[in-house]
View 1: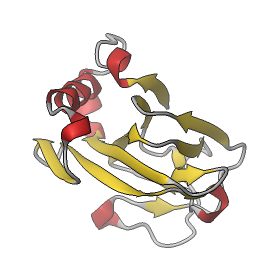
View 2: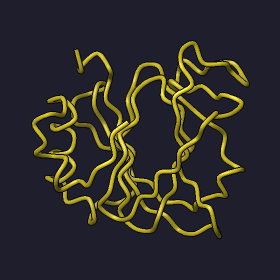
View 3: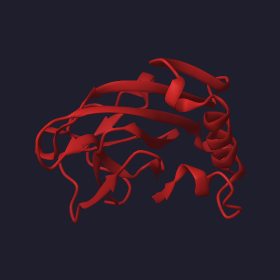
View 4: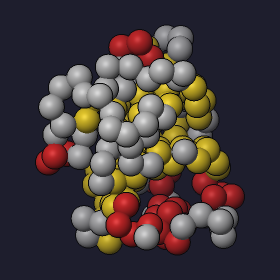
Length: 156
């Protein structure tokens, strides 16, 4: 996992080129002005969604993970808490893995760490890393964010 700010992450030479390319593409699109929707960067290998919703209490969010794509969660408006942790592979499933959506749910995140994101901050979650996005530890509130997806094959 990586926690950073969009303005510094885009130029961090230690990050893989695919992550920097995605972040540069997001900046180029002026994310604060983008309507809710799906945006292609490089076909099915790199894309992002602008989403609006309401955070939920952390305890009400299921721990999830992906096998093919890494996520970049970028807060545009509001505040987000992401519960995160690494359990180790293979991850136990609480229901069958959804291959079509590259989405699995696990019963818990042992040793969970909370990531608190403000506007302009991001978290990069790699395949196999458990996370509970769109969460809060207080009262549910409006959240506008980008969820970017990068095929892990682009990292090697």
